[in-house]
Length: 279
Image (cartoon, rainbow, N blue to C red):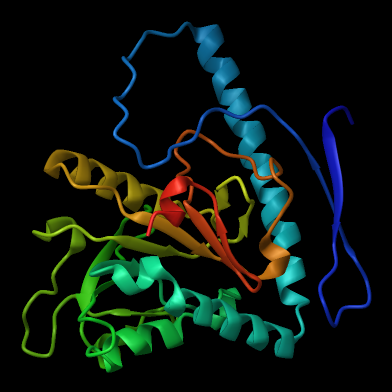
């Protein structure tokens, strides 16, 4: 196939290599948090619209192929290797200058059944040791429905989390006193950092989610709020096991996909934009 890419990923403690074969297809520019103005809306012909839809359909189809392949490689990871990488990644985050200096952040709550990089130590350090964490304000996700709507709510203790219908921990909408939790989209102060999950990444900043669109939808909303308030956009950092890191250009993207600024791997931080090395 013209323009196709074939590459291999071999992880420690595994005796065989995993072969990836992903065709390269042209994709449109994707979003990075920047103050760029939106392009004007122009009328499109039916032919142009149909072609655009065909391109999107091809991208979505390829995304499903990539997701399936990466899920299999994650499922095949040796448990001891996974634990080693969890510890290494979280240690890197806790020691990173951009983490130490942040005052407000949004972070995901890892789910073992989804094979996400563990964040329990990061969250515990923030919530259980506020003296050493310089009183960081933490917001975590709560899924509202099946239409890609998600909120980020403030929590102060691990006990603020409850299991939802899918047995994933998330904050209750109200605290123990019956008060509504603060929504980051209604907060008076900006956040400095987003710690993001994902299914696959590359070193160009592309991120492939699990297909629900929750994070890309939420990040667009926060982008709009930050722009309205004149706030600087937060640093976008994703956490990744080694099998999730693919060859540059192999992750298909659409205009709604938000790029990341840095990728934290078992080997350390991969800075992608200059912002990742500013501090």
